[in-house]
Image 1 (cartoon, rainbow, N blue to C red):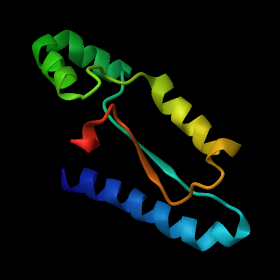
Image 2 (image 1 turned 135 degrees about the horizontal axis):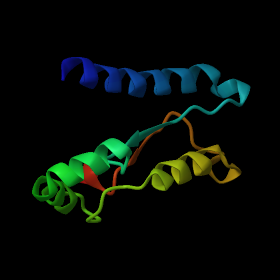
Image 3 (image 1 turned 45 degrees about the vertical axis):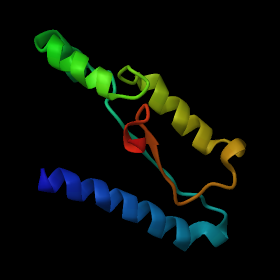
Length: 100
């Protein structure tokens, strides 16, 4: 887990550093921090361990695993003019898990 965890922290730091470095040039830099998302691997896991999957779902404040569209919608919004004043943000798209 050390390699996985450190790579996540590296992306967070890189996002902030690059946002500061390029902000004066009008370049915004943000990242998305996805929570559990329904991929083919997660679907397989749900089939193989339904009780465990249900426990995970119940631990997510909105009560469900995310859809790929949830991540995509966040990316589209961050790229839009509606997020024009946002830079250096590591945006959790996780159904509220990081709020706990």
